[in-house]
Amino acid sequence: MSELHALPKHPYHIVDPSPWPLVGALGAGLLFTGAVLYLHGYGWALLILGVLAVLAVMAFWFRDVVREATKEHRHTGIVQIGLRYGMALFIASEVMFFVAFFWAFFASSLFPSAAIGGVWPPANIHPFNPFAFPFLNTLILLLSGTTVTWAHHELIENNRPGMLRGLSVTIALGLSFTAVQAFEYSHAEFRFTGGIYPSTFFMATGFHGFHVIIGTIFLSACLLRAWLGHFKPEQHFGFEAASWYWHFVDVVWLFLFTFIYWWGGGSGGAGFVS
Image 1 (cartoon, rainbow, N blue to C red):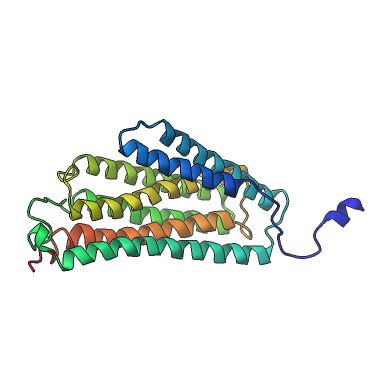
Image 2: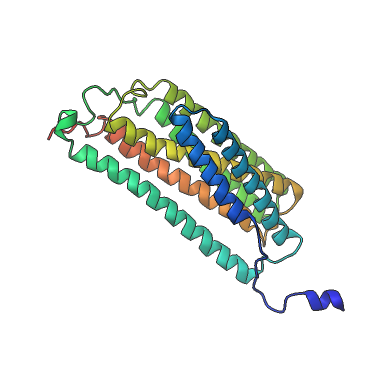
């Protein structure tokens, strides 16, 4: 009777006090402070400490949320509605990050200043051929969007082996995308050139690459959970959120490829002279 009395009398989840928001904020502060110090030549020790702190917080926080869902059964239908709203708002906030980057790019490309010769791309910049490695990465990322949808379909059909295969292929494609982009960056002729073009290019594409890495980690956690049997056809919000995030990454890349690599690289109508 005491155990029954302890069960909640409502479908809502009153979150227990957690140290992870505070510890996560401190870890993020260490990470960015370490990054700034590293860029100014003060070594990488604080940066590594910040990275480890953020990864540890992610692991422990994920563990707590998974326990709430699988062992404590606190993610009721009402709670899952709130989780979906939260994930949708999070993705909307991420969209606004990229809006800022695209705004900077279009402001510079549509109205090139006299400081860069009044032309876009600047005369000293040799952009990538958009139909070389950028196009290959486009195919990789679009294919990964289909494989994560395949995995989701297999989960709904209660086909666990198919879901594991689909997730594994998606993760492999995400790692391939990151490898190709790293190779591309290492061959960028303008990577050591100052100016507005490298700034907007690396900020937009690099921030997207960071999201691909985060999404790959997210999907890897889902693969482990799927292997442990945490997901069921009627309850799998963790996987659903990961797939939403991955499709968001896909869509952003289509905009990056179209406007920054193709159009803004002088191959599809850019090369403006003011």
